[in-house]
Amino acid sequence: MNRKLITTLLFLAAAFTVNAQAKKKKIAVKPSKSTVKILSLSQLDSASYAFGLKIAESLGGEGVKELNYMFLNKGMQDVFTKKPAMIDSYKSQTIIQEFLSATKKAKYDTTLKAGANFLTANKAKAGIFTTASGLQYEILKDSASGVKPKATDEVTVHYKGTLLNGKTFDSSYDRKEPATFGLNKVIPGWTEGVQLMNTGSKYRFFIPYQLAYGERGAGANIPPYSTLIFEVELLKITPPAPLTPPAVSTPEPVVVPPAPAEPTKGKKAKK
Image (cartoon, rainbow, N blue to C red; front, side, top):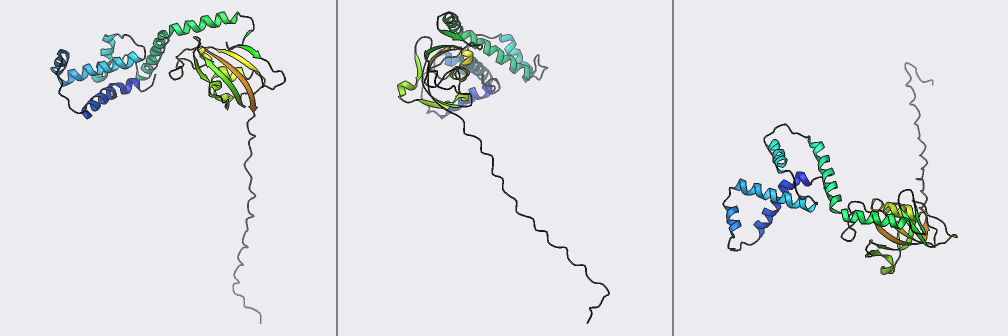
């Protein structure tokens, strides 16, 4: 959740809607019964209801289905009437984040269970190896003659990524061009897994959501809490370029001017 969701939602959501409507051309529309009821309310009543709508719409997008409306109302009243808060502002933010995280996790409960069940069954299959982190892999093509990359290396690979339902969400094979990237700049499952490979080998990785894109997912193609399957072919390893120490310039010698001669006092020059 965006940290500014709660603090800005009350003002921005309603203000944006009102402002957008004001910019539209005025169109004569026959008001419905519900519209007549809204227009008959005072400005404060209408705004209060509109704020409630926008808060609920935004929270609904986060997976929230209900709140305790008595405490929601009390929280607002305590702020507006300057009464002592039951919970301080800092702790409130933590509570909101934890609540939304749990709500989102419940929303994707089916995805979580599918991933856990798949990994449990997959682990028992012949030829499947499991690391201490929970990463699972299968060796499709071995190449003992190659070398293994380090996390700081840059690697060139061909790969295909799929969801558990078999849907491909990314493939360098489809693009007909391998990908090159720093091995420490990708998801943890890749960083760990590719280091197990020798150049010229091909592995299939089964990556738990914690080692993939976690509770956020990635774009529209990878939902939150998704267990991912990658086929990876390691083509090339490029070690990082050695750091060149900065050139040390030789300082110019400092020329110290001679001290001025002391003036002669009371002495006459000899003829």
